[in-house]
Image (cartoon, helix red, strand yellow):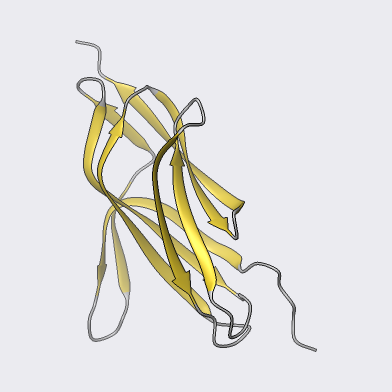
Length: 134
């Protein structure tokens, strides 16, 4: 009997500088993985960052909306991105890359990158933002 999933299963949620995709093979290389940002002043600024999401086992033949939200230490939304993905069969794997441009971290502390499906958070990755004391 085929497995029934309400949501796909998360295989990976990674914050990095960039993701490179080989056009011939489709293989992805995640470059510059990190979980800490140290700024020289406030707000800390990152020109670009990527969040790589890998999912398996979504609803067959039904588009699934995937969102990644960055929430500040106080819970306010800093950035968000959304994509739709289709799972042709129950064991399909979907790899998504969410690119965020010009992200400002106004406060120091823990930020959360949430992976959301259908408005519900299924996982999060934390990022610590600090400012160097000079």
